[in-house]
Figure 1 (tube, rainbow, N blue to C red):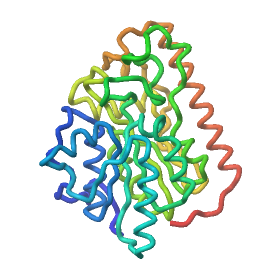
Figure 2 (cartoon, rainbow, N blue to C red; figure 1 turned 90 degrees about the vertical axis):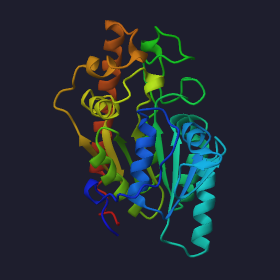
Figure 3 (cartoon, one colour; figure 1 turned 60 degrees about the vertical axis):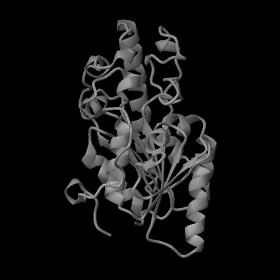
Length: 306
């Protein structure tokens, strides 16, 4: 199996002609994924941005087998496809789900949990643009503290629910592999995609994906925001691999929150007290993340298989 990297990506495209917004981080991640995995893929996309921009008769943006699943059913449809190809003795295809944060963290969480429990060989990628963007920028379980949406009033930063930690939720199912990535670190994303496609069982990738219309950011900001969110500590790059936790990038000190938040209109109403609350929540999350890594290291898991 040829290693996936930026240098080995083919010229051939399998996701072209879509009608996505300029600067959409989700379309970028999907394009990279299909370039890396090639034409031997079955892709499942729930109702949402990617289905709305990709399956418009008579055009279809996918150059591989792809289908739309009910909003809540991505995991179930993936499981059915994986079970079918396993029963037919097919081993050289990838079964890939590509769903937004609403269809993953909220509406599709039960279906995702069931799919992980069934241990079929699937790859589930959540492109996280941190709200229900396709239906009007409503708050989701992955919306960060302080972000303005059409269903979350401003001025409630200190009391807002925490963004769901999807990597730890996936890892809690005991699956072989789960990791986070961003549009600002493509080499890191492709390395994790390479690892995810090799494990024997379900794998989960949680990928930061800027949305210019919903965030009020520049259309060329996907890479810059994808780096800045890591440097400010608001999006840790981490992976769970057969019981081992690795923090891939741990800044010695976090960049000022304004470096990231200031580039987006959705955070424009925040004051100093709000920024302090966000920083405190970030620091608490990092303490929990480091503790998780130590706990897993202390358990001393055996060397994991490919």
